[in-house]
Image 1 (cartoon, helix red, strand yellow):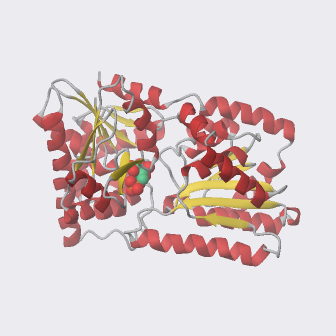
Image 2 (image 1 turned 90 degrees about the vertical axis):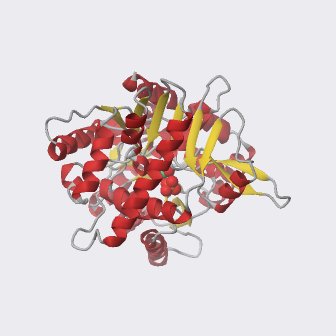
Image 3 (image 1 turned 60 degrees about the horizontal axis):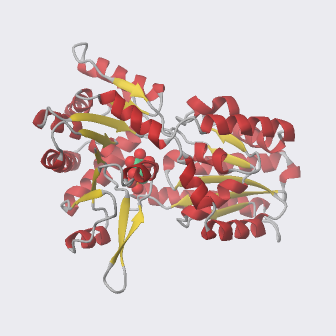
Length: 455
Ligand code: G6P
């Protein structure tokens, strides 16, 4: 089996003695598939981009290897890689599929975009060539996400023997969104996807894709779309939750929270995650319900992300300002209402998931949101999930979550208050239901569904 994704399952760091250490890569995609594909019983190859100077150094030193997995890192031309990743993938396709364009001003497809589009095609070609060169006859090839949308079309053309599938981890924009793209780009992306079965985390994104193909490519092209959501790996959560690092992070957290209630969110610093409006809803709740002042702490674990883009740097400022405003307005000598932590600490995040009373997941739009499923499986306090109906996970978890509208601050404040005041017995019943729903899918069922779709 061959997996192809832009960000790989491991990143490398250079040690003072010149050796290299492999660390697990970030993002739900790589953490879900890594344990399955590094199983010694599975014969797998993973093709990804070398994403940092350290990755490249490890590659050049012949040290970009990990046990039990054939890892192939592509050494892409840095200018092409930047235009592929920053411009087309993250400034255009990510914004498009998450409905984040402010259409009166952006996007603007000028000659710089044409150059970036050529880079996107070239990088997709490099990935496709790597697949074509390595895949044994009739092998299964699972291409992941919007960075590599052209790969399925390229590979099926060159190697019709291969069984290729494409999985999209983001939402899908639908026909109106696709029409924003230059016509030739929209046509190329959809034609490539239509060449293979395409998976999404929810029926909603699958329907949006099918409608896009029907409306933009016409009735003679038949899209093959299916929904197969990802679920957390319970074994990994238990292992990390029991580690010494998680135990000491939990002690730190207990000291911080004391006997107050704890609201938690864990996200990349990412505009689609809607972090600033989450703080606005909390601020409004503190305004409307004086009882909560001094009695609750909102812990926001927000890892910096995509900081090569001005949009993300500006959003980080906005998030920091929004947290500071709540703290200035309500904070006292012995109470800080919002604790914003931008360290990237996996064990600390899992520890926080065991301890929350309320978990906030309020994205503008989200392909799935794995934290919404990981939280209930880790939590030991019958915590309540406040979940945006725009997160893919809402399709599965709605029955046991408190809906939190991503744009309606009044409703958001009410949702937080309702979650904090839910009676103990209702919390217990709801949390048990939520655990069942969150555990229904695993990385293995998700992988099996992808393979079944192309067989
Ligand atoms: C999302 C995408 C993944 C991506 C991850 C992290 O989950 O679906 O494809 O890898 O974000 O983003 P990054 O840009 O850091 O790879």
